[in-house]
Length: 574
Image 1 (cartoon, rainbow, N blue to C red):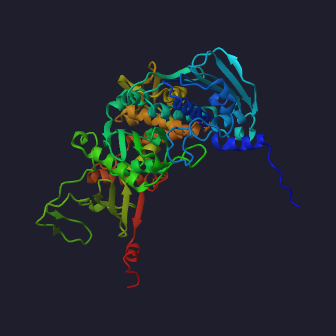
Image 2 (image 1 turned 90 degrees about the vertical axis):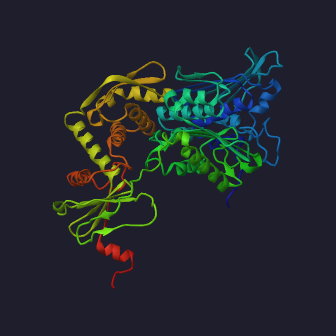
Image 3 (image 1 turned 45 degrees about the vertical axis):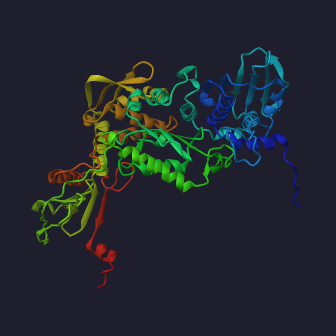
């Protein structure tokens, strides 16, 4: 017979702690949110060893009374929730789980002093074991110190990532919170080194401090005004993109979120104006009635549900597109390029008669630009180019009447990557020394990653050095990338290093950087090519290994035979 027994309270707490505190960044998030809920105007955060060895969050908020400290680390006890229906939740925290979860998995010391109290008080929790409250001298506010995270739950600790990866996750969380609450002063230190120390400031100044002054200066303001849903903030023009989506910052009712639906809306808004694989910069604040939003979906409060999700998504897409299309930003955010109508003839080889295209209307510029191929090109495997479609795809005709479609950017990206790889493996990638070294503003974590990888990046033709707080100096770039924008290149490489943390093998990290570099030298989608350029690209593809896919694994070539076309049109067998 199966015997059912009750779990001990310690085991229950440790199981629950695993849902709330998944990694050090989650502990940092909960502690900083507590400080914000306490109306702090200054928050100091410090982590050591990726947050595993130590996390400290100190604020000047309202504090916790001495008699309330034991209750503060008791599960499901909170001072924030005033609505038992869980509809009007106005604080970041409300479940009463963060402090007891941290105390169940680590060693937690909580020191606090409200303004009405003559002295501070302290309580400690070690793996769920609670000490008595003791008086201590301390300033007004609250200090939470966490050490030896997950010592009491070794299974969770076993599955943490590298110190570098956990540090990066903590940094991302702190940046999101600092952007969400610019009126609060934030300081953040990693292993004793200050990453940033910011006073209370307005939103644009906070953005400039965290993403760089050059990028912030290009941002487009958004403000929908008063309505049931207000959207304010800043978006980047279509010309300002990044290699990773980590530069999208969205705050909903004061809560920084990484909601998939909202992120998808941002991507859809930019879909027609930026190349595939690129991501915009955005910092958006959404506000709506609390009864239209459910934050009680997950213990970590990492997911949202909207009462009218379609309306929110549509409003966000519409607002961003309107800002991108406004006359004031038309130069910074160019739309798709089209050709002027080719009046009136097009001549194609291989049996197509020359015909006149004449209408009585001013039609949009055609998406297909025909050319006359060279007669001696057809014997090649990828055929002769006959047209360019959407300024992005080369249409070619092979000797066996197969139609060939080539993605010009993806194909050239592979060619450039193979060239750089050969140079690296044979004699080293040639460098192009810049006449004037270029400083690039970056967040401190990105600078640390770049400088740590500088000796390895030198093998790829990049010469970087520190340039004071908040910047690196670029002295040389690969000769093959001599037309690339050095600042954009370095920012994309920083994204690549962030995506491929220190736990990833060196060769894998360098390969990822190589791919980023190849992208910067490649023909872009939307660029008009001459017949000679199209033909040269096709011939180079035929001579290059792995040219059937781009470095990211996407196809570069599609083939349509006559049989395939007849099947598509239902003509097979007729």
